[in-house]
Structures are given as structure tokens and as C-alpha cells.
Amino acid sequence: MEALERIDQFVKENPILIFMKGTPQFPTCGFSSRTAEAMKGCGVPFGYVNVMADPEIMQALPSYQDWPTFPQVYVNGELIGGADITIEMYERGELKPLFEKAAAEAEGDKEADKAE
Image (cartoon, rainbow, N blue to C red):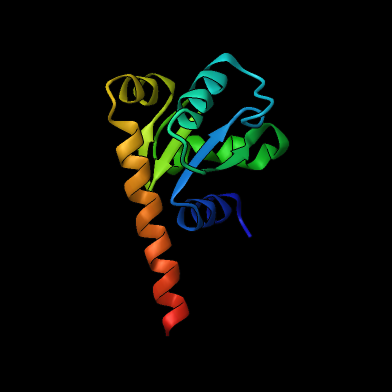
């Protein structure tokens, strides 16, 4: 599977996702660290991809949504932005409700799948 296909799969499979340098527990860059901290501060589980561990994804990701930097945060398949935008949304109280809604919708989708 090509890197862009894998990126697309990650984005579609995770209602809340960060492509970052390192992991939320052990970030390897300040921007990724601050963004992951803001995301953790919302209290909603999220997925992550460590771009440092996958050079193909690291190289291809900037062309996926025409966003040149890391980290990149996606909610329900849409690029929210990078560190500055995500942190500003968190500080304004906008990130947590967005995450909670995405998580609730994903949970609802799982329940609907079980009922079928």
C-alpha cells in the first residue's frame, strides 16, 4: 500500500488523529509536544502516528492535504491544522467539544454496526 493510501486509511479509521514527531507520551519536538498536551487536556482518546517511525509517511503527509508542517491534527477526516491552530482552539475552549462530538459520533457508528 502506498504511503498516501496508508495516510488516508489512518485518517478514516481514527475520528481524532494526530500525525506527530514521536508519541503523545514521548514527543520528539516541541510543537508535537504542545499539541499532544492540548489534545490530552480534552480528555478524549485519540489516535496518533509517529512520522519519525515511518519515513514514507513523513515524506508523503505534506502533500496529503497540502499542509507542509508537523504535527497535523484531523477530526472526522478533516484537517484541523497544526500546532498553532490546535493550541488556540484548546485555549478558546473549542477543541474539547469538537473532540467530544467526534468521539460520540464514532461510538454511535460502532453501536449501529453492532446492531446490523
